[in-house]
Length: 121
Image (cartoon, rainbow, N blue to C red; front, side, top):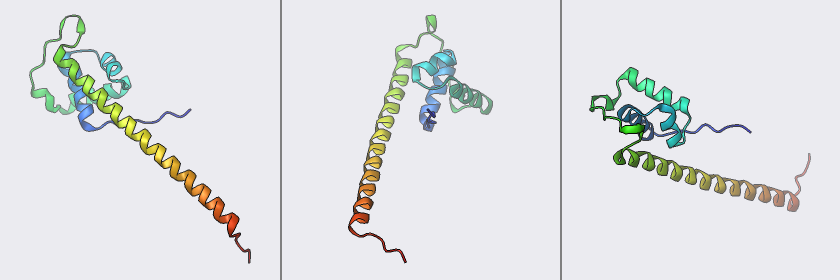
């Protein structure tokens, strides 16, 4: 089965990078929390560190004991996860509509060829 490439909007990516840089939480743990591939997040974080991310001028938050996110840090992953879920739901809805249109056109063409056979030459 072929894997589908997921696209994330800029706000989601910036938020994920901010979680890693501000909380000091490991990339694999943040990636698992957000439901994205570890390599994707790693490349985003390294690119942001190379280019000097917009969040680099903010003070670095002290990581909470045990590497856990504070209450304020948990809200953003939850929001991003909910946003990704809404987008996935919309994509499924659009796919269902597209599939219905394909079936309709196929049936219409089939009916058209039955009632009016094409003349050859």
